[in-house]
Length: 243
Ligand code: CTP
Ligand code: MG
Image (cartoon, rainbow, N blue to C red; front, side, top):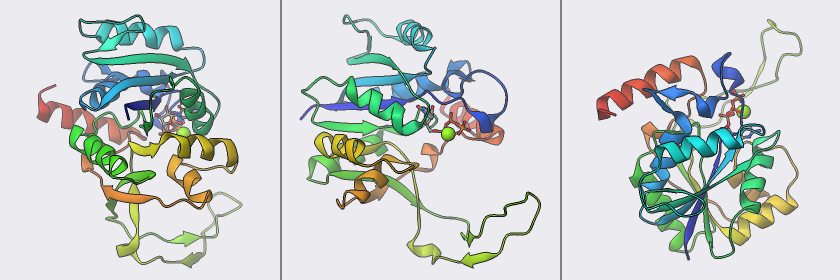
């Protein structure tokens, strides 16, 4: 089946500090969401990219995509051979993803969900995820082993109070999860219809349905731009790639 990618880009980027919505901030002169859209469009398998824009920023995002588009456009616009659509997002990431899914034409049987905040994901990672879905997995996440040891704590109710440690999961069994996460479309749509809990990724919604989710190797360059230091790293990676 044809593959579409939904790129949630509607967040404000509070942790990055004051400024434009995170996905619209520039990395070496190009908006983060353009880097992310190109990274997905670089996969030969991806034929549609749906960008979920900040709620009041859909027109701006559309003109950014048009400005960075290559020749060969279609009515909705294109990045090279890849078509794109823009829809306004919602208050939560989950809602934004659902609004992106709602905009998908019927022929797309495989859906990737990719954070605009992971602008540097290598195309090999995208293709690895797609391959695993094509090979029969209903939900696939790219992930890496952790460098840090992780503690579960009892979160402090007053700021500045030390937090008691509750448990230390065995690090070798933990994985830090990235995007794009890949899904059989019907499974992801069902998860978004049935699961209402607050979650931080799409695969966890599929897990709550009781469906199997599998992990494939992620990539260091698929890190999420979250805090100011991440901008420094992202621009250094781009400079190394000469972009
Ligand atoms: N996102 C979205 N709609 C929201 C919230 C987040 O589309 N209402 C998107 C972000 O644009 C980002 C991705 O989800 O591409 C991952 O979220 P995160 O890194 O948390 O980005 P923000 O929510 O923008 O950042 P912060 O949490 O620091 O405000
Ligand atoms: Mg957020």
